[in-house]
Length: 97
Image (cartoon, rainbow, N blue to C red; front, side, top):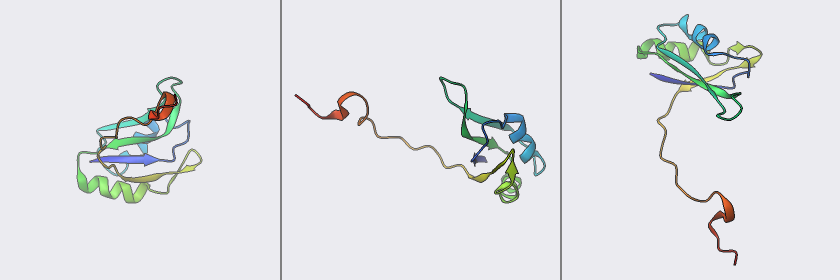
């Protein structure tokens, strides 16, 4: 099960995230999402736990817990949906001439 973890302090590492969830079951992967250019944390991450029951218990146990000064917001990750294209960039799609 893939778990979304939000409201992360910028100082939280993948090891910190893994340790917060390992107390509740097996953690397959922990990832803190970073900005591609600066490398700084974007304030959220994901934890993968292979056992759904353990994952659900971990979500209940870790949600709202303080980690490095921030209360974590934890829930089941929703699948990423396709984003509509266009609308961004120069001119915003309108003819200005």
